[in-house]
Image (cartoon, rainbow, N blue to C red):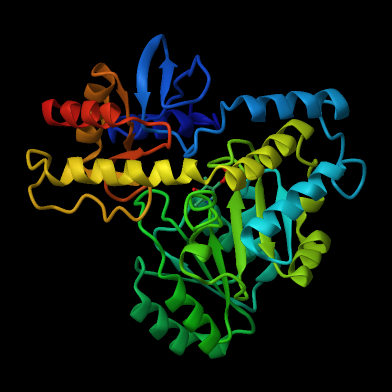
Length: 391
Ligand SMILES: *Cc1c(COP(=O)(O)O)cnc(C)c1O
């Protein structure tokens, strides 16, 4: 086998298995929601990004069907050629309104938005400062850009400031990149302090609002709105695939910035426009988010309900150890290692709960990560906690 150029794959897979890092897909056999059917089993779902329960909403489904009937299944080309429809523009205007920016641009996914945007504003002569807990798409966007990457310890503003002080003057442009809600930990970035530093060191700032859009802020505008930072100059990224229940990503910012991306960002220029169905579903989701703030309120009530349940429950894990600061609907239960996390995940599944183990390399330390939805009920949380205690 010495001259089989693919033989390394088998040994790589075996290493993955040995470390308990192996991943495989599980088939969902129902509409998305707080309860799903997963491989024949009815489970309470704590693994969804569908925070507001919109991915299975009749109105999104109807909008997607209608748009498909009117415009077809595919958009047939890139946006600059045959792939542009009026609903794309409408969606971009609605995103800009939600984010209170001058303009917005939609991509085929949030991942593509991040790698495209970061690599088109930064190159070899420039500096990127990146939180160590950032999402993979931010990290890979930084690598693709060819800029000098400085990773700062999680939310460590003092460290970031020192790095800017040391490094900024050696580079042309500078960009700070951060999740706004950290996807695997559920805490928030320190946006006002980041904006101050960005201003002081003449640096751009990009925040990824993937888990914040529709969830945080009085109108669902995200962390930027939550921190009263709307109107500040920054680059806002997000996804249509989480609280908006569809598929796609976006960047929002000044008119000039968006015009620049339309002319310079390869992951937007050289790829097919969003399908009519995805576009119409996202557009409908934004309208619902505006019309029905009670969905967001219910989600935050659920955060409070589980907080109360967990804080009065001292049989769970390390007593006194802080599980979460409840800044978002994402809550993590830290566990010793991958094997332990897998074991707890499996036990939860047997107890009727889907809350999978999150392991390296996604995160440094293994955990059970749950995300709440506005459609969860108190009894769901009680069952989760009972199962965690018995696990
Ligand atoms: C999910 C996620 C993305 C990717 O968005 P997709 O639209 O699913 O590609 C980007 N950034 C963060 C922080 C995310 O959680």
